[in-house]
Image (cartoon, rainbow, N blue to C red; front, side):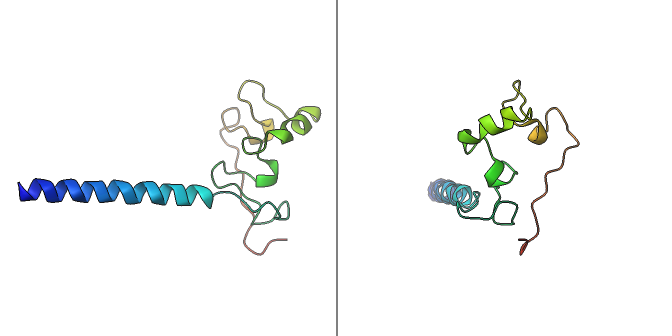
Amino acid sequence: MRRSILLSLTLLFSLTFSAFGAESAKKDAHGAKDAKPGSYEDWCGEHGVPESQDTRCDKSLIPAFKATGDWDEKHGLPKSQCKKCNPKLKIVRPPKGSK
């Protein structure tokens, strides 16, 4: 009986701390609004693209991509960011200290 109670409490604490950790990581996943476009700080960790070009975080960017013909209607992303259409596509975060 003691063992099952201890196991239940351990599981409860583990799940609780995992949830808080995931929420914290999600908050840190987005670049600062004042980050210089193309810099290390201009990065959305959640979507793996520069925050200044992330149409999933900022829907107001979509018309600009559409206007330049860089839009994939099927997947709802810029063609230049669509890894479903181009599986070999690599979008790399600039190194720390980049300007």
